[in-house]
Structure formats: structure tokens, C-alpha cells
Image 1 (cartoon, rainbow, N blue to C red):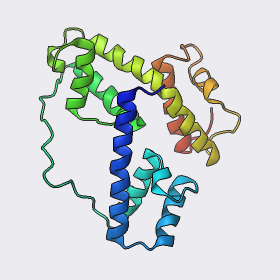
Image 2: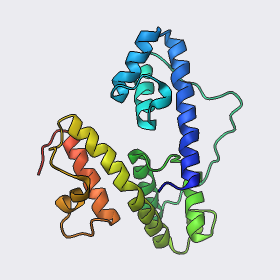
Image 3: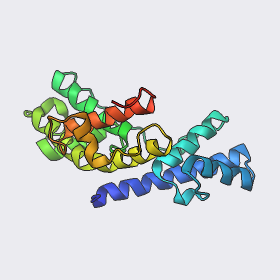
Length: 208
């Protein structure tokens, strides 16, 4: 179940992306049919921006960018907080996890400030450099990710199967076992390897 803060963040992100799509439509001067066809092409048939998922909205914006649309930051936007990076091995591992989860679509804000806010809830300190137990932060991120990854794996599995890049017989529940039979199928490491397996499938490297 998605937490209330995460649901609110996703709703805010969707609203922002919808506004960008609508701005792109105006800038590119897309007529009604062309605009609706673009939405449908990037969303498996949906013809209203309000019906599109975050990933589908991103795909529409990427297409608009390729067509010459250049989104601009809102006027008067406050500068993002600058934080000194923790370059220790533990800090680098935490950041790598955070950025990978952003690529997956679980972390919405990849900034150092957002990472520090997450780490603060676990360690009680404001910056990673001051964390006495970075292992607890790492395990906290993994535990949170393990709760979110099954839904992301389900979405991606369906997409790859629809595209013919993944055998139809593979089910999400069996995917971690297929890829990592010796690991806990509900654990982060197993779920992460399952995602990497889907990376291979998307690149067309074939099933195991």
C-alpha cells in the first residue's frame, strides 16, 4: 500500500508533468488529432493526459523534446539546496542505491537534500557524514525498496511481455526465484536482480 506522503508526492509530480505536456502541445502547435495520437502512442491507447501514468507522461515529454520543445523552470523558483557529498564508501553506496531507485521510479526526488531527509528519519542526523550507523541507512533504503519493487516489476513485466521481449509464461511472483533461486524472493537483492534480468530482456539479450 502506498503511503500518504508518497501518494501526495506522486500526485504533485503528475500534475507538474501534465502541465509540461500541455505547454509542449501549445509550443509545438499540435492540432487536436495529432496531440491525441501522440498521447495514445505513448500510453497504449489513452487519449487524455490526465489518464497517463508518470512514466507515460515522461515518454510524451521526451518525444516533445526530440521535436524541439524545451521545458523551462518556473520563474522565481528557489535554488535547490546545495549539500556537500559524503564520499565515504558507505555514503557512496547509499547514494548509488538512491539514484538507482530513482531510475526505477521509486524515488521521485534524486537530490542530496531528499536523500538526507530520508536518512534523517532513520539515523536522526541531518547529513550522511554525521551518520554513525550508515549500515542502518542502507538497510532502511533496501527494506523500503523491497516493499515498492514488486509493483514496479509487475508493471515492467507486463510491458515487456506485451512487446514480445519476455516470455508470456513468466510471472512476477516467480521471477525472483527464476533469477536468484538461493536468495529470499522477497528480499531486496533478489528483487534487484530480477530488475536487472528485465534490463537484459529489454536489451534483447534473450531469456535464460
